[in-house]
Length: 328
Image (cartoon, rainbow, N blue to C red; front, side, top):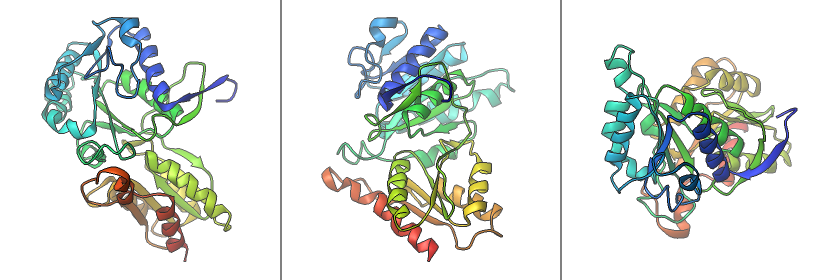
């Protein structure tokens, strides 16, 4: 952000700013989803956009995720750039056919003659006591889908820049926001900027251990690193920002330096993205690693209701214990 004035805004504000700027830049961009117009989204992410751009470009949809996704895919094939909101990631199961068998296949089936520039915004994770059908972390499913870009921003800066890049991309993109990040604040430039898809960010430099963390877990990793620094342990925090395509080079360069690695995700370890990250590091850094890669992930269980929901996902204390284990 050197040379540019900055302002401090929330993650939710960053979403709204990105949408507004892209809608002004390109008339093909429009929004569709449940309660995004008159209500302005559960957290206010689209508040005011209906009044500014009108109902032709901010479409309140009925409660039918399959229909919402289908309308978006069809309009994208015809040249529009829809931004879909699926209110909770848990509801995306109803739209899976449109996303996986249609949005992600048309380019291949048309021998590259048809693009599907559609963005699916949704939110997941714990933190609002929304119970088991509103709090899951399902990103592992989508990393396995060819043709789909998977984005998970952790800061307002990344959120705004990656959403703008996603809207301009000619491929289907799913952006998974985190409900516990909506009211976190961070600095963003006042000037126009984008964050490139597929480029990781080092959130904190260190020398003893690399912590690869995603989404809300980045904040926990940073808190853990602060506490471990008081013990003389230097942690490097790598935020992939895009789960796929994965910036393998940044992960490998960091671990080659620190020679220790911990991967932290809110999603379960079993069959997950954490396995992919750990395998990349193991394959590329086998001569450098002093200990096997440690994974710290959410439990493979239904999310419990109320205060105990956080007991099934990692926190800074889990991360501290994992770092101490790999450094023993």
